Length: 179
Image 1: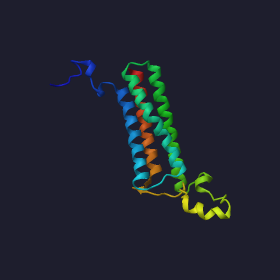
Image 2: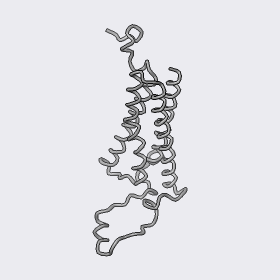
Image 3: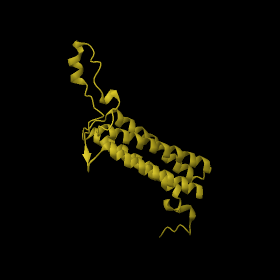
Image 4: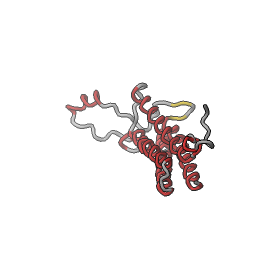
């Protein structure tokens, strides 16, 4: 028995609606990226700096919003709702690409990063608790690369992944406008 989209449009499959495909692709990329980030953190013990953690926010937004846009598009929601969802996804991905580029620039020492993760340590607390704090706190610096592959750090890969998500969101917008 075969599934033919032309014979039975209610079982057309994902390929029949590029808007749904785009939204699901964004959600899947966000899920895979977050899984990778947590794998690096929990399994490989590569701890994120404050900028790394901020770059995850866009993926935490894109995962449920991508699923919501896919659901809405699949259920025939008004075009404006779907377009608004894709617009938010596009803006979040572009902002995250910018943040990843900024972080990569900090790692390459092109510019100074935030003082809380790349500047001098200003407040050491009292002398009595200093040794105790040094034993319990591990400061992860934003300007030091902990892992590279093919010359790119995780921040560099974040730029590429975010730009891919932005391109897919733009494709989703174009597809929704044609539908």
